[in-house]
Length: 374
Image (tube, rainbow, N blue to C red; front, side):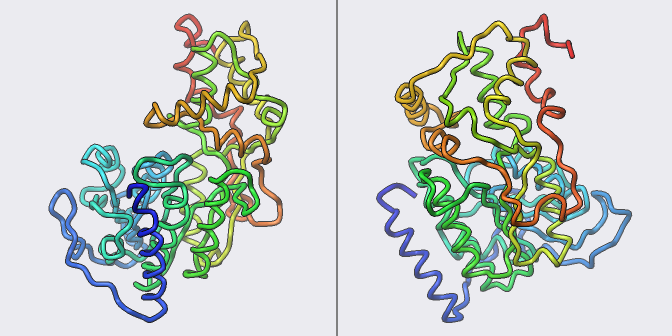
């Protein structure tokens, strides 16, 4: 929605909550996928049929909001590998979901166009599902959606509709560092989204991952781009460079979501997911060394300058590598698990450390002469 529609979006959310409390139902006609398949054609099948691969029947019919994003394709892949039906709500053209069609068996990946601000549209795309996974979230404002829309209001709307339709399982993905007291608007809206989802769907499982990394991410690719193409590597100040992070491989993140789906003991719990810990400075030095740019110096850049560059990129790039709000967040918060909530250990998953796992994702940033070196 455009900026001027923010107030009506909030009104929609309030109206939604009142309808849920009143027990009102949502009605809509059958929604059809891009291939003409009606969601009414999806039949729930008993779990556990087959040998366990993509041609088996897992019993999950999952609507994955945000499936077309970075983490979404790995979640769809994990579900497709075990023979799940995956409904993929999308807003754009067929290019939005085209790469997802091959991640499941024939007819198992069902893309359906929807409007994230319309309760009836959300009802339609979850009408045949027994699982709803919400990955929708943004780290910057767009001309259509604010941070509050993407991280708070839309997740609440999805949770309210899921509760009304008696969906068995809801998984909401938030983020490590979400806090009502954060100087970052992104972190505050993430926390508000958690609270709103928990209020309307108490049994929801909330996942708080640290920064995700993998092919075409926003962590490794940002530093690799700066290392390869800038004349020097910017030092963003001690507050930022010395903060600790625990990046999570996106494949481990998808495995964790799959495990919470399988395990009923995860209902109503919040999980904090973190990988190997290191500082931002250690990550930058690791990227520089492994790209063979050791000759490039790490030089301090005044905070106003780098914030101006970040702000400029927000307005000139469709997908900015970093934003001013992110600089504020990472400069004030250690993005590591608190140790007070369950994590990867409780899901029997051993996360991959970024320093031993990430080189294949950034190797192409090397100069040709170093490309095949270890």
